Amino acid sequence: MAFITKEHQEKAVMALADLIAIPSVLDEADAKAGQPFGENCLKALEHTLALCESLGFTTYQDPEGYYGYAEVGEGEELFGILCHLDVVPAVGQSGWESEPFTPIITDEVIIGRGAQDDKGPTVAALYGVKALMDAKVTFKQRVRFIFGTDEENLWRCINRYNEKEEMITAGFAPDSKFPLIFAEKGLLQVYFEGVGSNELSIEAGGSLNVVPDHALYSGDKVEAVATELLKLGYPFEKVDDCITVQGKSVHSKLAPEGINAITRLAEALANTNSFTNSVLDVAGKVIKTDATGESLVGLFQDEVSGVMTLNVAKMEITPTRSRLGLDIRYPVTLEKETLVAALKDAAAKYGLTYHEHDYLAPLYVPIESDLIQTLLSTYRQLTGDMTEPFVNGGATFARAMNNCVAFGAMFGDTPDYVHQANEQWSLASFYQVMEIYGETVYRICCE
Ligand SMILES: [Zn+2]
Image 1: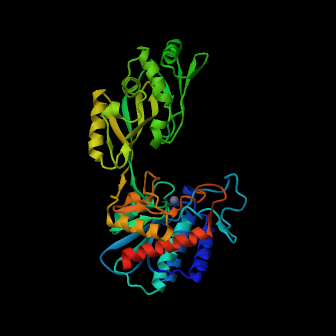
Image 2 (image 1 turned 60 degrees about the horizontal axis):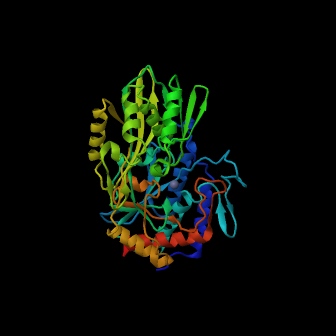
Image 3 (image 1 turned 120 degrees about the vertical axis):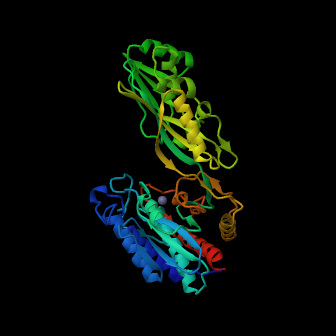
């Protein structure tokens, strides 16, 4: 059914422009009671809720300013559309040809920070549902837009929502690509910790999200380490009594495609048999070049999401303590408890202790589910695009809720401006996405 009119399109573009004009970037320095992420994030939330109210939704704003929602319809079931109103910084980002928070609308595109991520998709979904309301359809489920304001950082908004509000029965996040992402590996970042060393000092690696591309050793075993590196065939640089091993940096989720400089250095250090240190042994004698974790805890994999990845992202050995920072992406059907038990056993075997640093549950909704079948058939019917659903397409709020997937809003051939200079979205796509979201909500919540 065609619900969207020209007026809906025009009003949606204006609404998007208004929202882009609010520079809703996290500002911790401006955080205080009632505006946990700064004034502009709160403004974007208040502005959006006022807009929703004017469109006929009932709205609620968290008194502490973390999140808000807008609802329409009736029924037991609660269908969620998970959006975020915060954006990544743009001021100071090179390459912008216009003011990032002064939206420009041409015949073809709308330009400004948030056009693609995630203000554009949010407004498209809102007006898609507004068109249903104007067509006086009967909602047999409640449709709730949930607006977060801390998605680009720590998800404190959606976590707070989950602590305090009603769970959705199903839903989608319009914050990725079409057709949809139905599975995403779980994330577990942990440290293995042990006693320090007086004979070896290492400080290698940075962010846990990245495969380290260099690792440095300085000390009196430089010649022996160089010999071992040559034997192993690992490239390195030697300047005086300092050795730097080179690797290849990739995102941790692609760990097997990178080259880990830390484990290469550890292997060479361990092979000199000059040091007694359990952290070094785990990295250099057990894990070595294995980026799947098989050497440490056995092979974990499933048909849906493939093999586990394990990246040794950090190694610190000081006189007071030693530790190894691991980034693990585990298959969607594996229970977290099983993995944690295996990791704890492995740590204990080498006299190390296990510490959890960060965790994100996997996303998984089976392809055969009603939700996915409806989203997919609607998308395919309206676009003719038969692309299969994706696994591992980037973390969205869909992971924060059960029975929820990332659904759009970028098409396969949409130029990607997410987080980039001159962020823009074509109006043709914007209108088509309104149509897709309107029709989808109609089929799930109205028909
Ligand atoms: Zn986003």
